[in-house]
Length: 142
Image 1: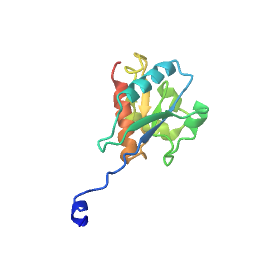
Image 2: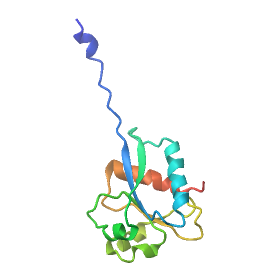
Image 3: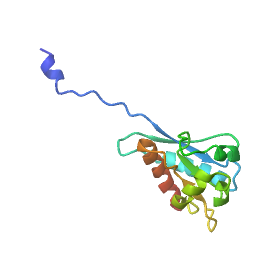
Image 4: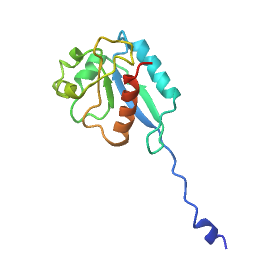
């Protein structure tokens, strides 16, 4: 007798969090401002179109070494925020992607300095959508 009642019920899909792995210079002159912007973004409880929550996490380690390790197949980093375009000089993959970089100086109060951010071309799907949401947020003046 219970079977007809359960037919119309659909199990709720558990919403998972999508993490944006952010590569940035932790000792950047704009580092504390980027910290504030991350907190501002998280405070909006950002979500993908599918409803999954977005969380931003900074990668830790030596900034220059982490930049040098970026390749066209590396999927450990979803968004890179550089202090300047000069940061990409030692990596041909990043140099090739600089033409698609987005300037986030307004969001970091770093203008008139160009502050490029790159979503590596190999990042796709939900990870790309989440990285783009945060990148778009960084383009806006706080």
